[in-house]
Image 1 (cartoon, rainbow, N blue to C red):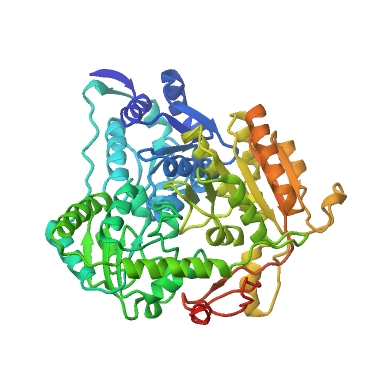
Image 2: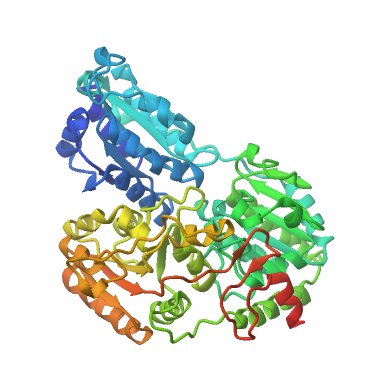
Length: 595
């Protein structure tokens, strides 16, 4: 046993649990913890400009690399409340991050001390555990429990609130005998998997819906192996995009009301059996369950017991970690294949590939308009960035169009805050991804409003030499909200344009993104025509290599473009011309017109 400050014990536990990086903002109430981190010198730290951004950096860090747990740190009061959005985002997408906050001394709690707030009570609904540690001797064990909970079952975030005097108190602690607690993951049984495979084998046109739990479990290789064994096409959800490469013969497209492909929806509507693994049947994926479930049998595999039956009742539910389940699915499927017990689904898989080819051709992207249409921007991005690119995005028409037009080929190469969708998330998350992987080709994708929310974090990228490319598709509109306001026959309080007295060259668009970016220590390029996109990307790559800072490429778009979406997966509307001239028609009708 050794005598040490409780804050030092916390730092030592974090080291043993594999933490090497943190993001945050120091403050008076958390300075004792920072003092111990500085003394040890084993945990790197990136200074955010906004505490919410620190939580999103931690998210990006976790999401980028399997096994990572991002850590965000702030002082008492508003630092904790600022990080609630990051905790909510992490909780919604099953992302483990550790949030550490300072707190007023114990004797000053409930006395309206400066910046004293019950942050544990505020954070509890969006964490797996949120606690204010009142006994110094409990600090190392609370941190031990935090890592155990973050990794066990459905992953998620934890908040630990440390009063100033608790951090400073001397305790006895033996780090040499410390061991992380065993991680609990439920696993499917052979009987359950055999039942699921028998149901699949009884179907004519089955699909596998792959959810984000597969990516979280680092099980994408097993997913592909299983799909190839049974010959069944795969529909990844947005959170699993890249778990099977977009150009894989069994990748049938994405399904949904917004971030989907016409061919994905069409193939799903033709299916009679769905095996969902590690997914939660999110409403932007399903639309109404009446349409989504009609005529189909469902098996649902999820790590969280209460997730099964939450949206609709499956015909079979299996509580299991995605990796454990997929390993057993592979093993049993291989045995059944060798015994001739699996059906040949090559004709069905071929029909899905035919839809993909025909309905992909419908989507027109080669517009020559100036200002540019977003469809042409995404076409140029596909051509320029190749298969190794890692996209980071969050919400809005920019993300929705990205989901429809871009291509992803590897797991953890589409990094997205799925359920929460907080504006401003993209920029700090991309910085977190860069810290997690210094060599990855990172391209962030934002609309102009998302970009403005936490734009000051560009200075973090400049200060800490965190280069990446940030594509800003700028129409000076809250584009998604403007499009949804069509249902109310209004265009109200969603325009961001104004006459900029300092920048005549951006009249009609307001913010001078290039000047702001340069003022924050980064580089920027403004692009007006599609012919300029490839040269701009080459220039951005050269600047990143030379200066090691983020480079923003502003794509100046036409002010109004409606992106395909709808209220049901069989009623997704196109608003732009397509190669066959089918516009403003639902996806089901467009598919019929091709037959």
